Each structure stands twice: as C-alpha cells, then as structure tokens.
Image (cartoon, rainbow, N blue to C red; front, side):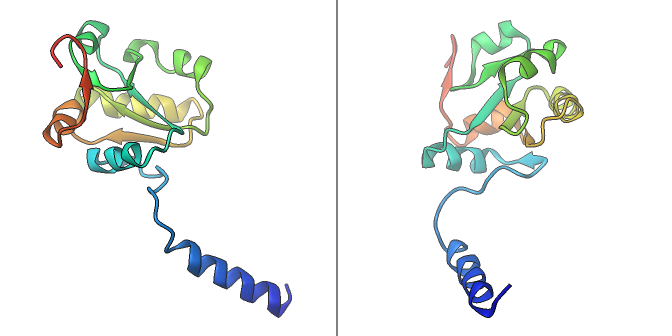
Amino acid sequence: MSNVEENISQIKDKVTRFIPGPDSQQMPVSTVKALKKRLEWGEPALTIIDVRDRNVFNKEHITGAESIPIAELPAKASESLDLKRDIYVYGEQDQTTEAAAKLREAGFTKVSELEGGLSAWKAISGATDGQMA
C-alpha cells in the first residue's frame, strides 16, 4: 500500500468514527435502550423476535416484533430471515437465552438477547401492541 493510500485509509477511519448513527447490533446481549435508539434512528435492517407463546404475544408485545414461539425456532426463522440479519430476541428469561443459542447454532450471525424483555421495554416507554397495550 502506498503512503497516499495509507493516509486516506487512516483519515477515513478517523472521520467515520464521528459520523452519528446507531451502532450495528453485534453484542450477544443488548439493552432495550440500544434497540429503541436504533428504531428511533429509522434503521430498518433488523428483526425483533418474540419467542413467547402466541396467546401471550397477542396480549402485548413490542411493536413490530414477530411471533415465533421457541418450539418453532429455528426452522421458521430460517424460512424468512437472512442469516446475516440483525435479530433481537426476547421472551421469558430462560427462553431468551435458549432461543438465541438455537438461532446461532442454525447459522444466524447477528443474534442478540434483549435484556429485560418486554418489561424493560415498557419501563423506557417503548411502543407496544396487543390486546392490553
């Protein structure tokens, strides 16, 4: 690499660190605040999966979440989602960890457990849908 190319590369690295925008989802566990920030930013390249029972999902869920009960993972997710898509998964605590592991084992590379699930989402006034919302 020439000196000019190296200088350009260094400048690009420095400049892009200061461009505002949400962080790409790379963490195995994410906070509800980080997810809300991404949604407020308007970044559509993510999927929120609720792995709770459909009846519970229908009562109340994060707006925009997709219902895929844990028993249907990862087959249903594999049918409809790209393996490199950013996925946030939530349910009951034990379900969340298990679901994330199943998705990772199926080859999904950007899976994050949503820390605190629906209750944490509601605590920061995140939008919800359903019969109780």
